[in-house]
Image (cartoon, rainbow, N blue to C red):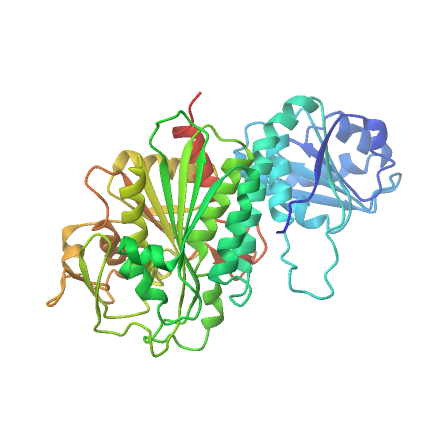
Length: 490
């Protein structure tokens, strides 16, 4: 996998600033006040930094922004990056500033002189998250060069604060790699193999093959993959870091490694993007990796259904009726509405086996959510206000866009079928809501539940503040924060 850039932490030594080859970064507040490292850079450059700050002050220094002095006289550095990160700045501004220098460093060694800034670890996280590039299939790709050194006044404190954040970065990179992989590389089998490899970091991983899924009665899940030569699998990942006997938080992910739409074939234009239709499973995997790496004191189970949706002589057809693990029958009107068929069995299995304290499913489920929310927010659907507010609070704290959407009986009625217990689609109106209503039918009474439709945020066509275009790793930070704030035991 793509590993985050190496980050080291050292005590402040301003004598090193003049001799560092590569890039140097210093931190100021919105008034342009310089700390000891910035003052040293100002002396080395014979007042150039102060003059630049005075010029910027007339425009107003904005938190989270960066400006650069290129090829500063009196220093060995190629450039000096000046980060505006006041103590009162919100955390996402600190990360945003770090991300800018992470992007700008290229292959150069970056020396981040953060002094006594309380945001030193968060600036480092921003730099690492943005310093990502998926190079796995480029023949001329070079090994990632350069490093990031954080020079700070309290090395021990900053290093300790950064340790769990670097686990988040690695989990996010794992998710991004999975989502970016082409479908001929990330098959259902290779996906499962990558998850099994996480046993080396302490996860308990189990792969359920088709014969076991048939025995369990997961017929809607199996129906999705029956037109493909790739075997359908369910992978169960357990992290038991909390108190023994405590019911786990359950994360359930849609892992359609490629989605043609099946017999209800998608248009050719844009179909190549359907390599990312396993984004929900990718996010679950990244969260589980993060929790294991930082040794979270919580019990969390991650369940992912891995399938490929292909048209063939054995594929499900529009008009077929399939019986779910729960026992409810589903009339298949559109084979391209396959994610909910996968999830409903995976969710029911999760509840039957683990009796979770709460459950979240994640899926690149509907194009309708993109029409509604664009690429700024995931759609959030829930049957429990308290649980939903806790997630939205975590997402806001981590700067990951999330917006609550409605549920209701009128939407549920749109799923009525004349020949089965339900249809798998409710028509064009409210498409993302009726998909959520379908899933809610498979949530047991009393189980707090959230459905996250991440179709618009899992992979994007342009750069975001913390990621280059492509897979974003959306949700790893928010779900890790949800666990940390609500499910960890002492």
